[in-house]
Image (cartoon, rainbow, N blue to C red; front, side, top):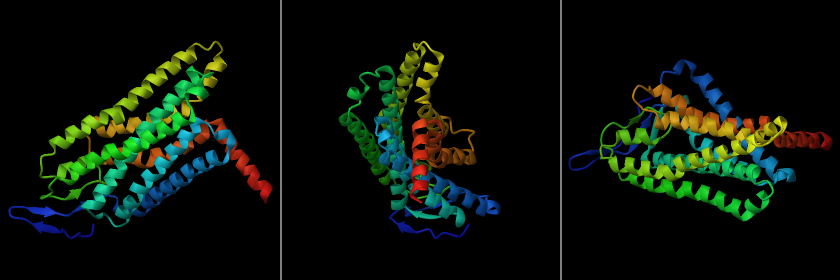
Length: 320
């Protein structure tokens, strides 16, 4: 790794560092080019796949329903997330690490955390939408009105932006006067707090308290919604009817399992005994693989999306 200069400001009794050194994926120098190309391919697939979902929903009247309306916002969230993380990770891989100013690091963390928060809320909104569609099919269009769905989406985006803002502002008040090396490929919360020479207890409590309404509560909404969905499906007399009904929400359930599974693995399981490489792999799961898999899962497991893709292909052939 190239030697990065350490900029310092000398105070009366302490030295304050003004940039972080991100190591990225040390130890992969022999596989730098294959790893770089693989991550670049994942990045392009993520952008194109989610952009395709948004375009299909916008351009096909058959997909103008609340479920696909929420799906476009989930895809938009995944696009912003991958743009925030992957280009910087690619740069670190290519240069065997690099430096990042405090302001840039905090901005990256802010958008990463706010987008993850918004995704948690959007996934819970989608679960609630499936609950209304399956448990109250005759009143679904009335209950999930355009006004309600617009409010739910607005709350999801604004909550992510404003809730995380208080955490980020608190982090910027910390002092960093010792080591400034982050053994990660982006600015996550734990590595930043580990480098602070200030007492970060208040911030840790603040993050824990704020995670309840934006992470724990959405998970409870998802669990309760699917509990009622399962009960409603079991009341259906025919086996084919049960399978067809549950299949309509199987894509969302798969996405939720992958998303929350990786989040629990990285943030809720004990850090003791978990190596940095394991943490990086889990981080790659929800910053790279999950955004890439979302459109693939919905495309392969959703008949409406597959039909929309076929119609687009037919229109392209007919236009030639």
